[in-house]
Length: 400
Ligand SMILES: *Cc1c(COP(=O)(O)O)cnc(C)c1O
Image (cartoon, rainbow, N blue to C red; front, side, top):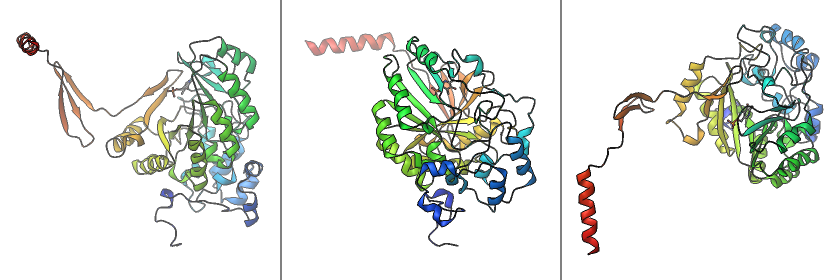
């Protein structure tokens, strides 16, 4: 064992390059275009690098008509090749279970398609919209909530109507918050992103813009100083990243997040609760602590959506509640995300919390703290009229 490595490598910020690529790859490692060109996206390429199980081999073949496989060299190197149950591997290597849809599963589990006033624009909440800019990502998550339209190989295609979408935003003054997502918006060129952000910024009622992206994790090399300088012109701009396991926070990811934070961009993280990936308090705690060290505030922990072929990755809701119980009070409040379920069929995000309000009686409530101790908190008492009169008299006495 290498004595320079900490005892738990998942808790440390380390680079995994070049890992399973030849030494010469280091000449190109920080070039995001090289990373994109060298993604692992065929069965031959994958089988040459990993000893595949029969379930994975079948999964890759089936994925070709559903949600493509694609893994950047940077992310691929986080896979522990000795561990068939590796939490990184489970997120990006297709498995045969994806081919079966459980009865509760859907292609569009959150009912997005029925909330699109314009193709590519989801308007579910009164004051904010989700703007789907692209169907491409640097790598594809096997539990993707938009797998029906992402990656370009499935039955449905994203056909964002740009002019109609901008027109809708310009003429809908209740929209004050625009969330850019997809696919991954940070795959666009700086020039193209700048043009989109400039157009949105020209709309007076749009106060707040945010971008949802997994690029800082899948392809941190893309977060260039030039990109940060461009993004900085469009404040107030927030970025929500997507990280599920502490190992994903590499040295390169931490540096990329630092560049975004230095550009004044507040960073949040969205995790999806996944069986065999991050379904324990220990893993979640290591993740949220590492996020804070990267200047990222844990924002949401999502119960996995009821997406077709996801039952092997989903947990019960009770397991999510137990994770929040294990964090709240036991660690920094800043480290605790809000656990949510995106309501099946289109209910929006519904917060799910452990129950700390044990009883509400007339006059007081009974509470439970993180240690399981009970506390009474009484309602406010009305001031007695005699006391009011006494204080009036006292105040009068003071001015004579
Ligand atoms: C998640 C989401 C948003 C943003 O929700 P917040 O709770 O404000 O982060 C907006 N629109 C849609 C359709 C969403 O799914």
